[in-house]
Image (cartoon, rainbow over all chains, first blue to last red; front, side):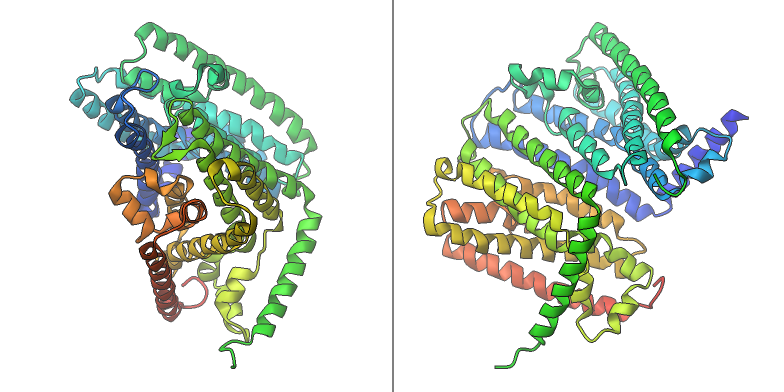
Length: 263
Length: 267
């Protein structure tokens, strides 16, 4: 019974995202190739124009491989369904969901994650092909994709907790935007995080964002051992549990302030 | 000489729009703070990215760290000016066509496009304009900017940046007359906008050529910064003018074609 509404929400989310197929395709193309082109441009400027041979232990080809692989995981980490939560709180639409026998935070996630799961499957197949062509172990892609999917959950959980600020203020849109911008840099989507100088490494290590793109990419490229991967996967699970507790606290407190006329 | 448009009438309409927006923003003070915070974080991230890269190299395609920071200051200021005047209007542009809101504008005795693009003014983004100029000023000397009266040129180049952003954003939005929603194309504009956040000399030839011609994102911040620091060649000035005129004509053509397709609500 409980699985039934979850499957229905998943199907509904996928149909909703793909109703406008051209838009769906544009979104994937735009979010995949432009950031990859920007990354490649940086490597081009550093290595080909600047004449550098190695940066942070990585050569031009290593950087290009990173770009190719991180491109796949960047597609999985996204999803803006936390924005939907803040809009529900702000506009008072949340009331409709509170009357239903489903958890609103989980419902919005399942509906929003549907297109990501589809993209993750495509990326997994592509990634295995890329791994094989680069002489890497394609099976590592399975573990890497698992980590990326856990990253997707953590990303949403943090967003869902931040969205509760809409109970206090008029909206949480800006806070979610700030979160996304920070994630953009600290997930490893723009540059490999080992490029950060030693004195700045603590910045990305103290957030879970590196588990979204940088971690899966490192494992898929064989730069993390299996032991390191399992250790990082454990950390990811801990972050997920911590974020779950955070949602329970913030939503518990937020609902008490909710007036149903808007937060 | 008589102007083809009634300028005082347009200025009066803009004055009223400005006043209305000022009153609205004075009410939503939290919005001011969060807007400033969002942009401050964006600035910090762009600066951090280059800080990380420059921790490994001294120059990037001939640009020193200070020159890149100067470029970022000019780019932020140019983008802030666009945000103040136009950004919110483009977010609502799709609804104008899909929900038939354009009907009301078409009945007014003033150009509908002027009304469509001047209704919302984001005054809080004015703070970011100051912030961007402050960054440019801080690094101007170390970047090799001549300073003095040359600061007057900054105003001209910011205007070039805003006009470019306006033309490009319009080109990406106008397709709403032909597609059901223009959300993905708007999003794509912001994806391509990432090309504007780096100095154009760092790009490989093909991409550089594209962002100086067919998708002139380099005119938003990079070319203005380059013009202020080193000056442009005569060919570059000509190319800049030709590209902007071409985009203006293209947008005018698309707007007229789009209007012919427009069928009021839910077209």
